Each structure stands twice: as structure tokens, then as C-alpha cells.
Amino acid sequence: MLTMEERLLATLNALELSSGDGEDTADLAKLFNLQPSPPILLPGQETGTDADAPVSLDTLLQERTGFTRGSVVIGVCEDGLPFVLNLNNDPPASILIAGDPGSGKTRLLRAILVSAMVINQPEDVNFCVVTPAPQEYADLVHTDHCSGLLRSRSLEARKLVNHLLEIADRRQYRDDHGPAQLLVIDDLADFVHGLDDAAYWGFEWLVRIGAQVRIWIIASQSSGSMSWLEDDLLEAFPLHVLGSLASQHDLLALTGSAYLDLQPLARGRQFYVPCDDTWLRIWLCESGKGE
Image (cartoon, rainbow, N blue to C red; front, side, top):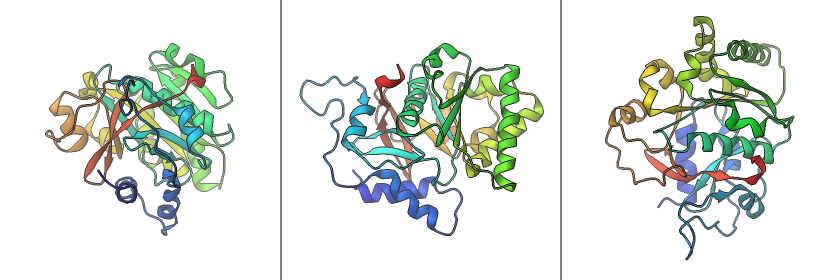
């Protein structure tokens, strides 16, 4: 088991996709609230717990303080430390959550959004969701954090890409500030197949560059339609989060290796995130506030 310090250093290396003058790396120390406090008990760590019980975001926020503006919780590591992304300070890294059907991809996307809502004010973080099943996110619409819930392959979804490109242009060249923008895409293949050529290339640019101007793409992809995606688009996502994944071909496409020595995951509850030359298991972290 890596120490907290070793995991922090390893994760900084894994996430550092564009380097600045060193301040970005220093800011990343804020991601892992490392002040001494009792670890949060995870499912199965105490007698009588249900191994399939969710890790509570509410408990996490009660036990640990000091989350900075722009923080979102990706999950909880097996030692009880939160795995946190800071949308204002991190090196840019669009995130692709991949796994078999039933591996918990939608639940993880929802958990990330709820953490963004609970930790941040609307002026800090906004989000828009594009999905073939809008009903799965309908309870998150009635909040000032949400700027849209759109159906995949719709005209509105294509227009959204152009809107985000306009925001990116203002932030690049006109010193325009505003909240961090999360574009959450549930079922990436379905989304991109509804785009025309101009919107597709604009979207790929946002995947590669958008987070540099605080437009973050977080997408899910099922193993069943992984082959629908161009290799260049898969490679444009610097950070891959893996749920249960049976196909060695898909594992090779996402990680560069078809034979990773990974322990089994609690299906629908656990994921792997890259950490230097290894992978960390995390539990998704849910809250009743989004229900």
C-alpha cells in the first residue's frame, strides 16, 4: 500500500499534462486534504457492514474540511482519503469513465455532479449534462449549478459545443472569467455520432484544450460501443477511469496493456484511477442531496 505522500506524488505525475512555472504542482497539494484525521471506514472495514453499501459524501464532508473552491470528489481511496479534482488549479485533464454495462458509470457521473453542487456555489462551478436518458439526471436540473440537461443527438447538443467554444475563445484571448464549466456526457459514442463534422472537431478540441480555460469534459463510455469511437478521440482524454471491464481489447485501447494485474472491483461501486505506474481502487461517493 502506498503512503499518502507517495500516492500524492504519483498522482501529480499521472495528472500533470501541461506544466507551468511550478505553481500548478504546488496548488495540487490542496487536492488531498492531508491534515491528520481519522480515516473514513469503507464498506467491509467494520463488522456487519454491507460490502455493497455506498460511501457517503455527507459523512466525508463532515469528517474532512478545507475543500477549496472548484473541488469535486471523484471517489474515496481504500485508505479513506478522498480523491479530489480541483477545477481551478489542476493541470488540465478531460476524464473518460469506461466500463461494462452495469459497472456504475452513470452513478459515478451523478456522484461527481452532486459533490460539485454540495462543495461549490453556482458562481464557482456550473454543469451541463448530455445524455440519451435525461430522466436519470432530472433531479439535478432544479439547481442554479445546472445550465442544461440535453438529449444526445439533438440540435441543442450540437449548439452547446459551439457555445462552449465561444466561452473558450473569450477566456483565451479576452481575459474573461467565470465559473468552471463541466460538460458531462453520459454515453460518449452516442453523443459524438449526433455531431456534424464541424461540431465533432470542435468537441475534440475541447477535450484536448478546454480544461486549460476551465471547461472540463467528463464523459462515460460503455465497452459495448467502444469500437464506435476514433482512436484519436480516445487518446484525447488524458485521464481514464476504469470500471469493471472484461474485454482485453478495450483494456488495451484505454491503458496500452491488455493484461493489467488488477484486483476485482465491487461492480457498480468501485473504479480504478491511474497513479504513476499503477492503478488505485476508489469507491464512488454518493449523497442523498441529489436524490
